[in-house]
Structures are given as C-alpha cells and as structure tokens.
Image 1 (cartoon, helix red, strand yellow):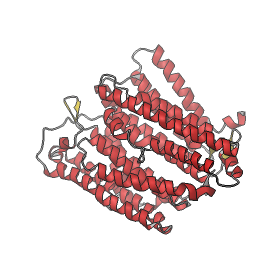
Image 2 (cartoon, rainbow, N blue to C red; image 1 turned 120 degrees about the vertical axis):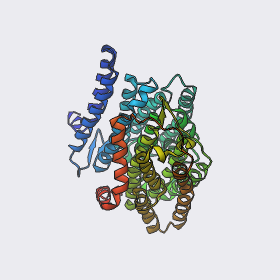
Image 3 (cartoon, helix red, strand yellow; image 1 turned 45 degrees about the vertical axis):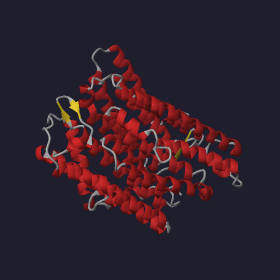
Image 4 (cartoon, rainbow, N blue to C red; image 1 turned 90 degrees about the horizontal axis):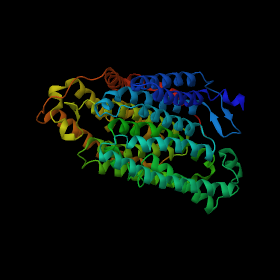
Length: 472
C-alpha cells in the first residue's frame, strides 16, 4: 500500500491542498484572494508532480484498479492546465458579480481531483467515486450565483438530470458486475466468455451515463440551460474540463474491458456521433445568446470527438485526443473574449452585443476572428488540422457515411460562426466596452490565439506526443 502511494503523489497533494485551503479560509479573515492564488499555485505544483512520473512505464496500483501511464498523465496535464487557465481568466468576473469566495476555487479543485481519479480508474467502483466527486462539485458551481434565479435553476436542472444519468450508469455497472463477477476492467475482459444481452444492456446503460456527461445527443437536454444560467466562469469550466475526463473514460471503458465486443458498442457510438454533429450544427443557427450557442457548438464538437472513438483503431483514438486538445484551446480563447464584453460592471452575452465590435476593439476582434475561423475548421487554423486528422482516421476505416455527415455538419456550422464575424466587422457599432482587463485574461486570450494561429507551423509536434498513446 505504501509503495502504491508513491505513484499517486499528485492526487494526494491536491487532496491535502483542498483540506488546507478549507482550514485557511475558515480561520483567516478576508482570505479569498489568498485561497484563490494558492489554488493556482497548487495546481501548477500538481502539474510538476505529474511531469515527474516515469512517462513510458505502465504502473498498475491497488490491485489493478488504478493505472498510471503516458495516456493518463497526458489527460491529467490537459485537465489541470485547463483548470489553471479557467482560474486565471475568471477572477475579475467573480469579483464584479460578488461571488469571489473561498468555496469557488476549492470546489474547482475538488472537481479536478474527481476527474484525475476518473482518468486513471481501471475499475468501475473507482471510476464512479471519481465521477461523483466531480459531479457534486459541479452541482454547486452551476448554482453558485445565488442572487440570480437563472443560476439556481441551472444548478437544480443539472442536479436532477445528472442524478438520473448517474443512476442509469450505476445500474449498468451492476449488470456488468453480475455477468462478469468483477468490477475490474482487466478481469472483466478476461471473464467475457460469450456475448449476451445482459452485458450489452450494461454497456448501453453506462454509455448513456457517459454521453450525458459530454452532452451528446440525445442526452444533451441540460447543456443549453445550464450553460446560459451558470456564471460565465463556470460555463467555461463546464465547456472545457469535464469533457477531457469523460472522453478518457469513454476510451478506457470501450477499449480495455470491451474491445472484443466492438460490434455491440460501435453502432451506438456512431449514432451518438452522427446525432450530435447534426443536431449541434442545426440547433445553434437560431441562437441569440452566445453561451447557448457555445452549448450547441460543444454538442457538435463532442460528436466529432466520438467519431474518432467509433473507428476501433489507435489512429482514431489519437485523432480524438488531438481534437479535444485543440478544442480546449479554442474554447479558452472564446470565453476570454466573452469576459471582455463588459460595460459599467455589466457583462453582455447576446450575439447582437458584438455589433460593430471591431470599430472600438480591433485587437480583440482579430483574436475572435481567428478563434471563430478555427472553430469553423477553416485552414490554416488549428481547428482545421483537428478535423483533418479525424477525417483521415475515419476514412482509413472506410466509414464514408460518418465522414460525409461530419463534413456536412462542418459546412452548416460554418454559417453561424461566419455570421458572428459579419456582425463584428460589418454591423453598426455600439457603445465601447470597458478596457480594464486583468493580466490573466490577456495572457489566456493571447496564448490561445497564438496557438491557434501558429499551429500550422509545426503541427506534427502534437501528433508526435499523442502517437505515444497506444490503447489497443
């Protein structure tokens, strides 16, 4: 047991950090800023601990229920890095809405800890513990702005629907345990003697629960309302960080215990992918609120990520990981621009509020132009390469219908991205927004814009890193 603890220093450290910050917040008055800054420092230190792992080895801990390898380390780095930038970008927003409290950063750390457990889980029970730790924190974060009825409503909606999905997921876990005699992924794969309806139903129920977590169609119903009603800083967290952990669990669950049952689950993943891509592209067209548009956009993007998983190949998995990595950068940049739509301490969220934005804010408009082009998949932006790798992996497996559907949904979604650009550059200008942006927001927007714009110079670097991930 002690030997095992040597390999989970990041999880242990972040757990102790949460306890320390709680005590600090309680016993020291006016410690909100200190707790917030320490949260960022602790996350950076956790990143350093993960980088210190032996990268190429595959370490199984606690009777093979917890796994440390390059794949889990890479996804944890993505998760923690995203969490750091969410905290850096959102401090001013929280202060203006008077929700800058010690609980905010502590809940974010708790959610990230749950995601780290999910990412390394090699057992259904360990995975579920991580999932519930993540979800419980997100319930509170969604309704964090108690003075706004929309925020309370979004938290309640997410809680009720998430509880339902967790129940279905847990029922699927119990079916798998009943038919295989174990909750461990490795033992499950060894005990599958023949395919039966009980196992298939178990897989379906778990996929339903996981599809809810990434808001894949038809389990997307919570996303638009929760994204719109939650504080924008929480919406950013929802749009980026939980998607990484959920995608990792999708990969682990499908390709470790149930790779031999690919005929049973592949068609489900293809359906989720096609439905999400089409619905995400069409439903976003009529949206007027930017946060609701991002919600439908994220549904479509998750459809693309699932398309890579449906191939049943390492290339498909790697293309999905590349896609989610670039998607994170694009969303961090997009929300950084949303945080800048502020006038007299009031934030604006409608698409019409961007009317003539380029006249008074040319640099931010240029950044938004680059980010929207990338989201639409227009070369040479990073978003184009993300879709290129994905389509390449799909076509290699002769899944032409899936590729054509993805291409058509890309064309449709380009409409509402280009419409925003038209509003920014060609519509009548409105009153100038405030320009007192905090340094963290500027850093986040500048870094994400530069990464998106200059990715084409050396696109193979990310491919080289991700190509070291071999699941099958």
